Length: 132
Image 1 (cartoon, rainbow, N blue to C red):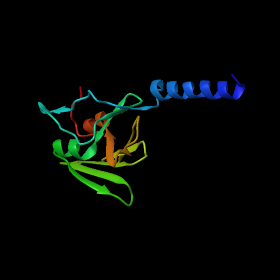
Image 2 (spheres, rainbow, N blue to C red):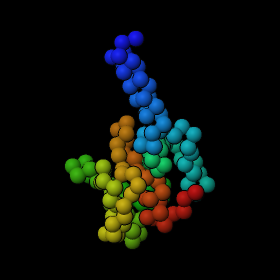
Image 3 (cartoon, rainbow, N blue to C red):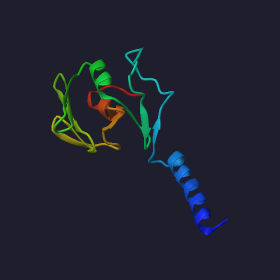
């Protein structure tokens, strides 16, 4: 086998391994179910796990938590309010504001399949909701 073919073969295998076994990859979470207030939520986009963080469609979760939700397409920001709590997130930014206080996220909100996904635990805890 020529050295170019060997390099391509081993490079391709390495790429596949990095894709499936990398801690930085995004994995579809087919078997993750979100239960809120003893009710399973039916989401139009499956949750994904990235770097150990579960990302979920923002509107379904936040509205179920009783928060009002605003999406600013121009700034690509999500603003959520519930009682005296105001949370602001920006697509691609690991910085979340909770009542103007900076919170650093493990994984930033992102758009996948035309749906905006947010880190479930961080946002739920911002609204004083317990996550298991």
